[in-house]
Image (cartoon, rainbow, N blue to C red; front, side, top):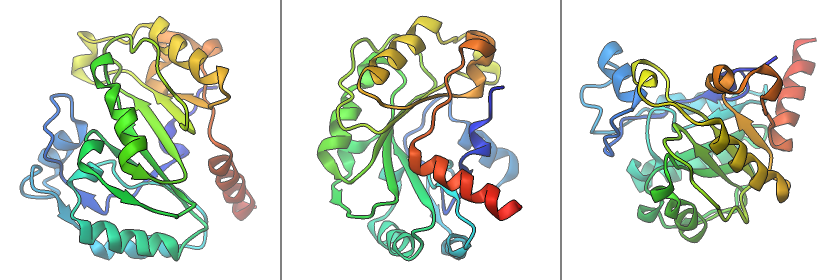
Length: 229
């Protein structure tokens, strides 16, 4: 049975807001609906949420579900990274669409830096990720996938996520099964795990779904199950 990625990875929105302005942005719509912050294009930092990292029960955390890492102030990132270093029991994921604006090095072993790629013309983001962010783990999210990305250089990438458009725009934009299959085949050829998000279920079918997690994420989930016993 297909699983929801939100059951595997929890959003921890310490920063809310993004300057990029994607037309399909669900986060902007959520902020407008719930009035989380006054202006979505002016990211805000909520340091009080840092305490949530101190939970002993291990978690897989996504820290950019309502922001883009490229829009964070350096001081925010440094404070958050410092707290991450104090909590090795968790795994932390970050995403950006502008890796060209980021330049830093980290030795943290429990952080994963990724880029969002929605079409072939954005493949450059993967190269920029590897070049500009020197880290131990990288991932790529193809979501929403608007066209066939073609042949992709996945060297050094540790995990790949694929998803399609959701909501009202899904009536006009639909990911082709061939695109998801091609990405997955290329990744599997060099032993990279791939996770198809649950929104691909109507397109791909239950029997064809691929939902693989990196080993550190699986370890966290197993530890969570032990805590529940």
